[in-house]
Length: 133
Image (cartoon, rainbow, N blue to C red; front, side, top):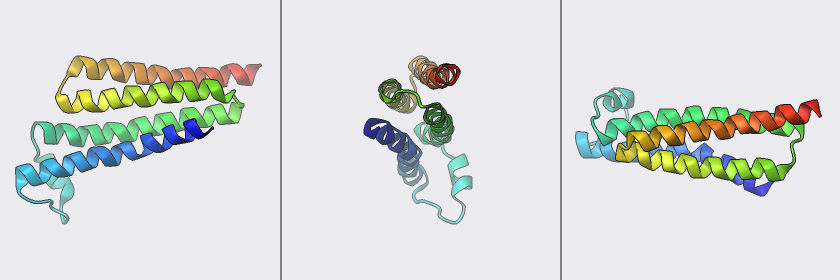
C-alpha cells in the first residue's frame, strides 16, 4: 500500500511542480510574478512559459482521474500488487509526459498521455473485474 500512496502523493504534487516551472517563466518573461493578477499574467506567457501553464492544468486533470481510478480499486478490494504496479507505471509515464511537454516533443507527449490513460483504464478494469468476482 505504501507504494500506491506514494504514487498518489507524487501525482498530487505534480501540478505544483508545473506551477513552479511556470513561475520561473513568468519572472523570466515578464520581470516579476504578478501576485495581484496571476492568471492574466499567465495568459500572456509564450513558448515554454505557456506550455508550463497548460501542463499545470493537465496535471490537475490527470490527478483527478488517477485518484478516482485508485479509489475504485479500493472500493472493489483489488489486490494491492496489481494496483501498485499500474500506479508506478502511471507515475513514470507522467514524468515522461511532464518533460516531453516542456521540451515541446508533441509525439512523445501524446504517446505518454495515451499510455497514462490506459493505466487509469487498467485500474478501472481491475476494479470492475474484482467487483464481479
